Amino acid sequence: MLRLMVLGVIIIFQIANLFLRRFKIGRLMIRISGYLMWLFVAGIIVDLFGVGESWHIQVTDEITLGLHWFGLLVFLNQSIYNFCQSMYQFVGDWCVSLMNLGQMPTPGIFTTKGQYILPFTGKWTVADGDSNKYVQHGGSVSQTYAYDFIITDDEGKSFQGNAKNLQDYYCYAQDVIAPADGVVVHVHRSSKDSFVDGKNVYCDSMDIRGNYITIKHHEYEYSVLAHLMPKSINVKVGDVVKQGDIIAKCGNSGSTSEPHLHFQLQTGKSFFLSVGLPVTFAESPPSIQGGLLPESPTSA
Image 1 (cartoon, rainbow, N blue to C red):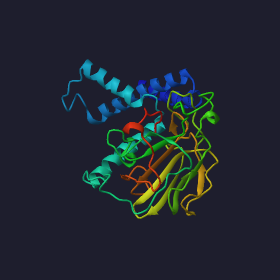
Image 2 (cartoon, rainbow, N blue to C red; image 1 turned 30 degrees about the horizontal axis):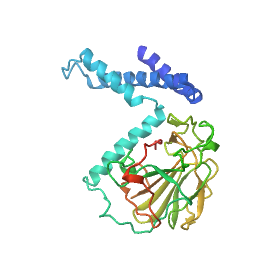
Image 3 (cartoon, one colour; image 1 turned 180 degrees about the vertical axis):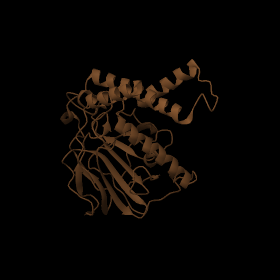
Image 4 (tube, rainbow, N blue to C red; image 1 turned 60 degrees about the vertical axis):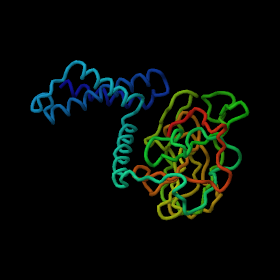
C-alpha cells in the first residue's frame, strides 16, 4: 500500500512538473519525485531478487544512505522520460562499445569519405566539443566528437538584453545549412523551445535533442543537427539536400541551457547506437583561442 502511495506521488509530481519546471517549486518537486522513484525501484529490486534474504546481504544504514544519495544524483533535475532516454543512451553506449571491442575512430587515423563545411554561415564560437580528448563534448559514444556552436560578441557574451528572452540570443533563429550533400533520414519537428534563464539546463521536450535532422551523406556517415527552432525545419524524410542548403534555424529545443546548434557526425542513423566520427571541415575549423575552449554553457 505504501509503495502504491509513493508511486502515486511520483506520477502527480511528474505531471505537475510539466507546468511548474520553470519555477523553483517545480525544480524542487522533480528532485523529490526522483528521490521517491529511486526508493520505489530499489524496493522492487529487493522483492524480486531477495536482497538481504536469499543472498544473505546485510544492508546497513550506511549502505542505505549511500543508495539514497546515488538516487538523488541520478534523478537530479530530470523528468522520468528524460531519465529513460538517458538509460537508453547508457545501454546503447555499452552495446556499441562491445560491438566495436573498444576500437573507436580517432583523429589523425580516421578520414571521412565526404567533405564537410560548417553547418552555418558567418562567425560562430565553439561552446563545447573538440577532437582533443580533454575537451570533447561527451554525453554518449555518438557524441564523442560533437560540437555545440553559439554566437558571441566582443565581450564573449552570447546574448544582449534579457537572458530569459530567446530572441535576445545572437544565434537564435539563425540559418542552419546542410554540411554536405545527402539524403534526410530522420526529422523530428514537434518539440517546443525550452525555457531559458541563462543559468540552468531545461528540457521541455520528450527528446533531449529537441527538434533535429539526421542526414545520410555516405555509407556509415550521418550528420545530426539538433536543438532546432520550432516550425523552422523545411525538409522531410527522403529529401535530397545539397551542401549549403538552408534546412532549418537554430533554436533552443530539447535539453539545453541556452540557444545553440548541436552538430555531430556518426556511423549510423541511430543517435543511441552509433559511433561518433571526428570531422575535419573543408572551411577553416572552429577557432579555439589558446587551444582551450571556454567553459561550456550548454548541455546536449
